[in-house]
Amino acid sequence: MEPIAHIETDFPSKFGLPRQSGLCEELTGRIVFEPKYRRREAFRGLSDFSHIWVIWKFSETERDEWSPTVRPPRLGGNTRMGVFATRSPFRPNPIGLSCVRLVGIDYECENAPVLLVSGIDMMDGTPVFDVKPYIPTADCKPQASDGFTAQTKDYRIAVDFPQELLEKLPEDKREAAVEMLTLDPRPSYIEDDDRLYGVAFAGFNIRFTVKNDTLTVTEIQKLTEDR
Image (tube, rainbow, N blue to C red; front, top):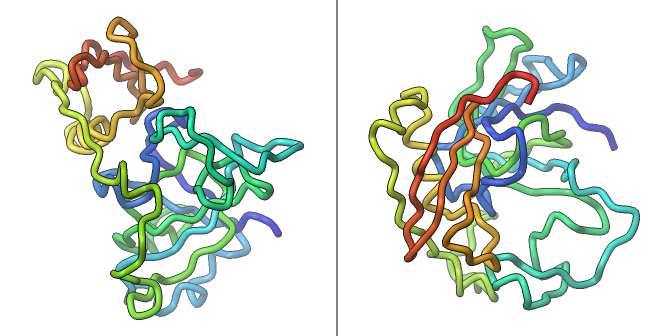
């Protein structure tokens, strides 16, 4: 099995990515296909769907060995769950699955056709194995149980993003940046009021602290191209 595409996003590293797709609809990406798959007829009918499944590779977490249990970060980092009961990237096969909104298909840009998507949870350059339409009648199960994720599904944190710092970001990235930060990028098992964190996003390093359940942005640094 070989990648057919890769996704371009504003995240050059894993830190700061939403823990699931669809949690932050403002985060956008572009799925760019390999040359032999850039055939317009392969996309015929896809634009009729509002959402798609993306099957991709955890390219930064490959290991020679696997563990039958993992520690989900949102459970505090100390509780172990079976790997098959989680969406941890540390799996026997490093395969990810995301449901994203199909914003559109660009047939005119370089390397067209390119899929424009939102609600992403993938870092820049992630290899994509396949794309399939999301079909509500088959894929939506309103009565499905949440398992242990019911404890954390609504978790958000207050964000204090001073206007003068927010304006250092491109205007079309500001809403996404704030929404991403409300998901609290920190590992949940780390509680250090004095610790300074940084998220690489859209060419900037967003630095912040967390105290009294409020995330406060303290600095915006432009990333150099070689970083």
